[in-house]
Image (cartoon, rainbow, N blue to C red; front, side):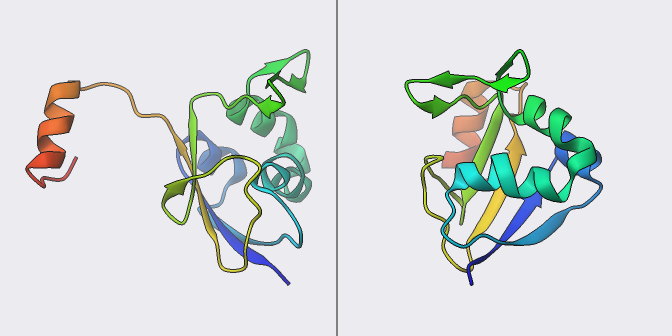
Amino acid sequence: MTKVKVKYFGKLRELLGVREEEYDVENSTLADLLIKHIPSRHPEAAKELRETIFTTVKDEVAMNRDTLMLKNYFILVNGLHQNLTYMLKDGDEVVILPSVEGGNCEDSVKMKIDGKRL
């Protein structure tokens, strides 16, 4: 059995009412997790979840060159960006983060170089 942990932040945390969950995702991609597994556990929030994470057109997830189009969200697996076609592995940790806006780009780069917290 392939078990993954999913952590939610921002609007998704409020929408789903949980900080993190564990899913059994045998033979599933990251896209399967986002399109099938999470919405099936939260059917009451499935439509808003889809519209929050993905660009949608007439209630359908928009695609660009056979790729689902994310809307201002970062999806990390074990701390790294992965394609939505990534095959999930047992023990993976998926983090769904809203984009962060504001601040000065030069300050962000300097803070990373200086080792300060953002």
